[in-house]
Length: 201
Ligand code: SF4
Image (cartoon, rainbow, N blue to C red; front, top):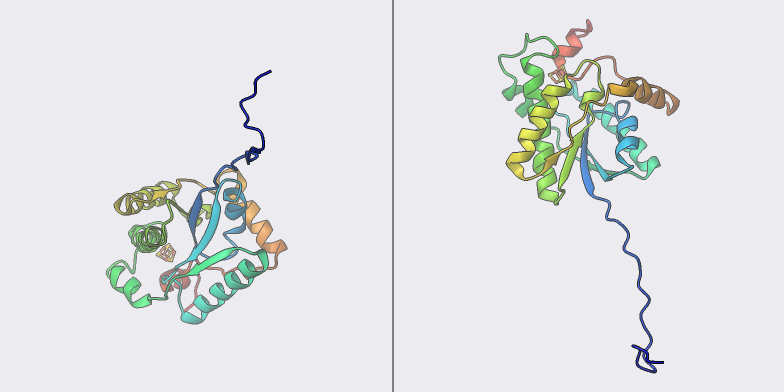
């Protein structure tokens, strides 16, 4: 009986290739909005979280939200990239929009500032995909976020993951998860104008 094997030469066993899990840079606005989205995306993506939120005022509040993110990501073994707190840039770009209501023009500019930076960072770090948890909030328009995120990604060759995370009770679930994990939850979106809208200075 003939054999294709030469005597004395052993075959290297074929190691099955595991499917590649695509990496994604995920912009997060704060700890309590994020756990549901992270859990959902982790099924298909190798996530790195990105905290870039120069909209948050005052600075003590920014530090508080960032610190909460640091503690959570460390305990959960999640990768985190921290952006800089360039609040002056945020104020420059939103000048003249101070009196806009939440969900108005100022919020569009605010999304663009944060998502453009996330797309920049994704491109710089070699990510093919990026996303955002922003649309989990019932106060945020997912269509606007998806349009801004996709446009910012196209300019930089990075694909934006379009979603409406508040669907399927996403906000309710993430709120419950955040409560179970004992996260600090703020009572205003982030900027000084949204803070004033809650009756604070
Ligand atoms: S309300 Fe929130 S999304 Fe709108 S401008 Fe202020 S921080 Fe940004």
